[in-house]
Image (tube, rainbow, N blue to C red; front, side, top):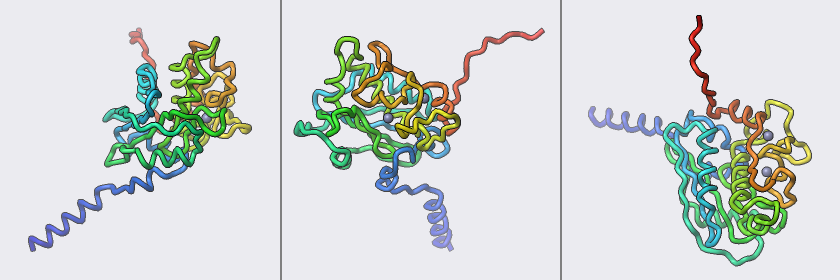
Amino acid sequence: MTLVIFVFTKSVAIEGKKIVDAKVFHNRNLGASARELLNDAVYKSLTVEIQYMKGFKPRQETINQLSLFLNKYLNKPKGINIVLNEIGRRKNTPLTTDSVVAIEIANRTQFVKDDNIALYILFTNSRHVDKRILGTAYRNTSAVIYGKAIRENSNARGKLTRQELETAVLLHETGHLLGLVNKGSRAGSGHIDYDYPDHCTNKKCLMYHATEIKKLSSVLIKGFVPVLDSNCVADLLANGGKQQFLFKPFVKAF
Ligand SMILES: [Zn+2]
Ligand SMILES: [Zn+2]
């Protein structure tokens, strides 16, 4: 009798525990984790693993900006943890997205576990085969920033500093992981750029297509890192993002 009860209890415990295959979980299309990242229905905390190759460690201010961005829009009551570690340099040959995926598979250490979801962001020592590309969000929890391309396209007269440009590209790719635009977080208004899929039509928005390519538009003026416009913010909120309560001074009604 005792044994029967034991077996019964054990099976209930297993059924109650959510078992997720991390390999399958992290191998989905861009935007597939938008809602899981934004709301807290299943995942209450987030670990962001940033791996960089020597010489391409993101600046502390960049990490601070990422933390502010994530804490502003994500419902993660148990917290958001950003961990950085260095990985070996690669030969300085241009990368394809397939070779970036191979680097991730060989080095990534943080995966979904219990109620903690994980993101992976790689800063490389080389650029993409397409010189114009500064960064790419390529799977549901993965993005890459091409460090060499960031370095080559920043710090010139009138252009963003290296720290500003890496922040702009990092936050832009994070926006894609959160499902922008209309790729996991449905566009609630007409701001989809049909010429550049997954992007916003507003030239001043962080999710404007030119943020991640070399042909930097007027968006990226020195000293000005773009932010999400109201349409993109509305899409995140509609998909489970954190509501932002504006401070309203209490006025006594007479
Ligand atoms: Zn983009
Ligand atoms: Zn926008």
